[in-house]
Image (cartoon, rainbow, N blue to C red):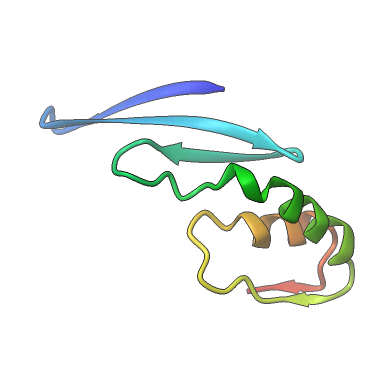
Length: 80
């Protein structure tokens, strides 16, 4: 886990960190009550990688794009 600190206009600092899962990097913000990246979905994202080859995939209601990125990584024909 890599921690990154960003300060915008010297008014507010935001803490973010990078997560690597299944070879894909995500930048996750700790600003607010939810990160948008749910660790409990790790196995589900891994499954999408395995079953998406040559399929068209719609990642509906996504925030960090975890399912879409894993579908693309798994060889999906199209990802929206």
